[in-house]
Image 1 (spheres, helix red, strand yellow):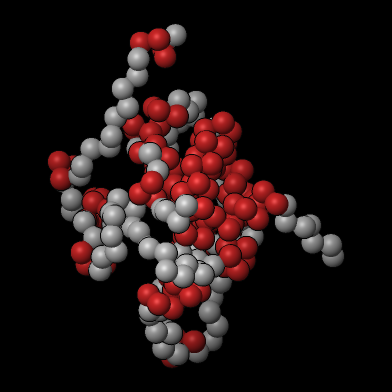
Image 2 (image 1 turned 30 degrees about the horizontal axis):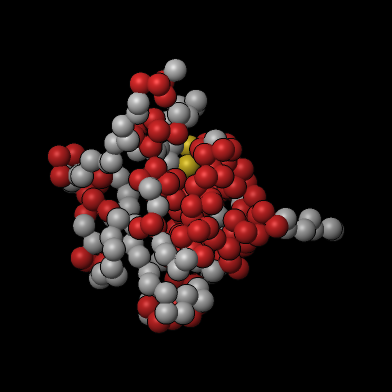
Length: 212
């Protein structure tokens, strides 16, 4: 069986998704979804808009920066891309970003493919497996999970060196219990957070001539 070679475009996509996901390239390739995710992101954002985002993200990484260097719209695209790797689903974008990108499709969450759900990286964060797929094997419930990785260990695995690690929406590293509730993943309803407690997204003013 001949395995098709990974294109330079997909290789660059995987390499620069490492800081977004927190997983090394080995795990990203192991999902078998890299090319599909790239195609999905480009289609959902638009080829031109995605190219602009990717150039901005690449520049931020090359200059030893991070998500804090992105515009609000690009930050939303980065969030969606991270969500895609973790869950196998493209999320609903913030209304302001959806409008700024002038997307021509419905702003709704959808699973990219059945295998994408199974290959979601979220299962690996707690050494679990999706219901009905990838069973760990007989007797594995008696084996304790491996210890939580340390920050230094993650830095080494991701080859970050002395670079700072940022959480989206924050400028400094903080303990998990210090992350504002509106920045935590998952549905807000499950976290009992009223809409009034969530900061509004930045709104880009559009000149009248831009509508022409």
